[in-house]
Image (tube, rainbow, N blue to C red; front, side, top):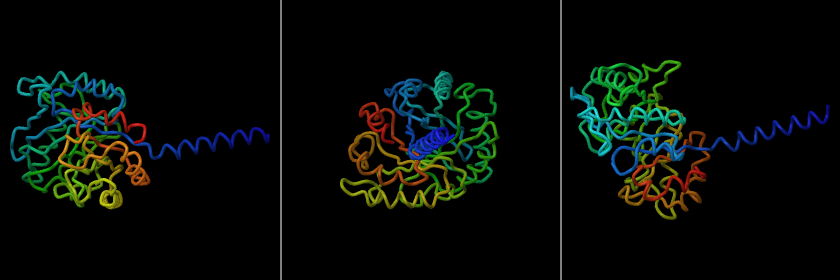
Length: 298
């Protein structure tokens, strides 16, 4: 009896240890779609490096515009050429990778004119990319896992409405995930209001091209302070540290692998909301090998 109790206690202790050590394990989210030389979507998911892939972008929508995706050299949406991605999307999802459609981007024509406009955009997204039905779906019959808000222009109005309408399509068996990529200055100028709804599952904050809150060599103070703002004041499930995958991927904010693994991760992984690292983008990650170098530390 005593031996069995000792074995049981040892087993329980080992399980607890695994749980404790596993709590800070994170994922890597990647943006794919804006460079035809970054490999296919299926190849991206086959690397085993990523837990999330954001398809970039749907840069045209809202205010009565006909929505249009732009995946650079990967496919031509005007000739329904992006339906070939359907099998790639399904292969990613079969590996447990969540595939999101990223709306907005740094260059595009998008804004929401009213709450009703937000409702119409949500309906379009549901029918064309999520669990609804449409005559001609851009990615065929593949059902994406959710919508990523990469809003960097237009206005800051009605993104909260869009989040509510999209969230309204969630069912117990088909959740619509909502993610966002705000800039690190807090609160975000574009989607700061929407993030307060508490409807966003994952928020990958862009800690680059923003010197006041990004990493600088030998000084993580600005980044650390901003990280604390995001993880304490935003009601999201998980917060990710968004970074350029190479020095060429952004104007500033790249963190060398050695600095990330020795200084930055130890400063941010203590947060219960730590989710991992987001990288821009697959093309630059291919050039640098960044995700492969950091994934065992994330």
